[in-house]
Length: 468
Image 1 (tube, rainbow, N blue to C red):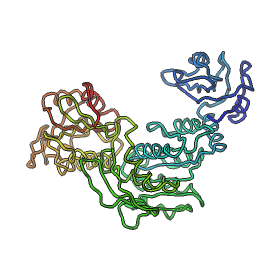
Image 2 (spheres, helix red, strand yellow):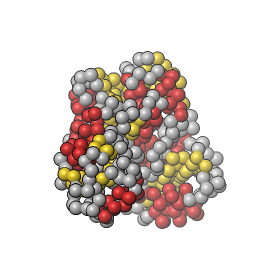
Image 3 (tube, rainbow, N blue to C red):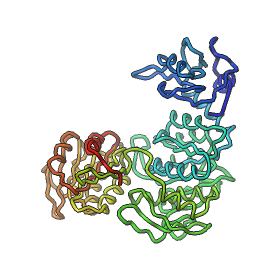
Image 4 (tube, rainbow, N blue to C red):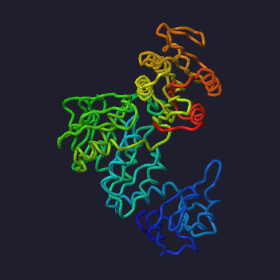
C-alpha cells in the first residue's frame, strides 16, 4: 500500500484510533481480511461473517506484525474503529488511487474479463511494476482490496470490473478512475440481476461513459451492442476485432490446434502472434489487451512477444492437461454462460486427439426464461463441433441432450450424427459414467456454472498430470 500513518488512515476512513494505537505508526504493508495473510506493517480488516468474525482473529494478525486492525467493535490490539469495515476499505482505496502514480486500466464485459485482465497484467508487467486483480476478485470488496495493493513503485493498475445491476461499474470506477477502459462483449448472463440483454449493455456502458476526454476507450467492434457505446463517451475511442475498420485487428487467423495464431494489425504496425492460450475467444481477448498496450506506447513486436509468452493465471479456465493414460482434459469449469460454453465446445472440436471427444456440461445458471433454449442450443453446438459424446449434469440440463442428439425423452439418445448424449442427475453419476466410458487418448471438456462440475474436473485431475 501507499505508506500512511495510522492517524492518516483514521482521517481518510473517518475512523477513531484506539488507545493502544500509535498515531505515528506507519502502514507499509498490504490490507488483508484473511488473518493468515496479515503481515508486518500491514492492516487487518476485521469483517463479521456468517461463519466467522474477523475481530476474533485480530490478535493473531497483530502477532504477525500488522500495524493495526480496522474494526467495528472494541478489541484488545491497536485498532482504527469505523462504522463499516468495507466502506472504510473503499475510502482507503479512493485515497490510494488519488495519490498513486499508477496508470489505471479497467476491463469489463459479459465474459472473458478475467482472462483479458490476466493478459493485460502480464503485458504491463513487461513495461513496469504492475498490480492486477487476483482471479476474479472484482466486486465491492475485491476491487478496493486490489487498489490498496498499489505501492509508490506501481506503474500500472489493472482492474476487472464486474456488475450484477445498473450503477455497479460506475461505483467501482469512482474508487479508482480508469484512464483506459476496454469493453469485451455483451451477452446473455446474470439475467437474474440485469433482467435483459439491453440492461446488461447499459450496465457495461458505464465504463466508457465514465472515462472522459483525454482517456481511451477500446470497444469490440464485432459486437454491435459494444460498438454502439462509442456514442456514449467523450474519450478517444478505438475498435478492436476482425473487421477491416478496427484500429486493432486480427488478420490471417489460423485456429491451429485450438491455440490460435494471427497477424496483429495496429496503427503502429503489424506483428505475427501465436497464442499459448486455448480457444477462439482468446483472439478477441488478446486484441483488447493489445489495444491497451498500444495506447500505453508498446510496439507491435513487443506486444506480440508478450502475448506469445502469456499464460493462464486463473484456475479452472481453459486449463488443458494430459493424464498419464493419454486422456486430454480441458478444465473450463469455473463458470459458464452461452457464449463461453459455445467457445469451449468448439475448442474441444479442434483439439487433436486419437480418441473420442467428450463434453461434460453442467447447468448455465441465471438465464431465467431463456434457460431451456440456451441449453438446447448448446447441445446443437456440441453436435456441430463434432463432439462424440455429451454428458449433461444436473437438473435443468436435459435440453442439452435433446439438442445434441435430436428430440426425445430417453436419458440416453444415440443421435443420427453419431453423438451419444446422456443426462445424469449429479456429478457423482457423471464421474461413474466417465470411469466406464473413458479410453486412453480421449479428450474431455468439463464446464458449467461455478461449482456444478468442479467435482468432475477434480476427479480427472486427481492423477498425475502434464500441462499442455
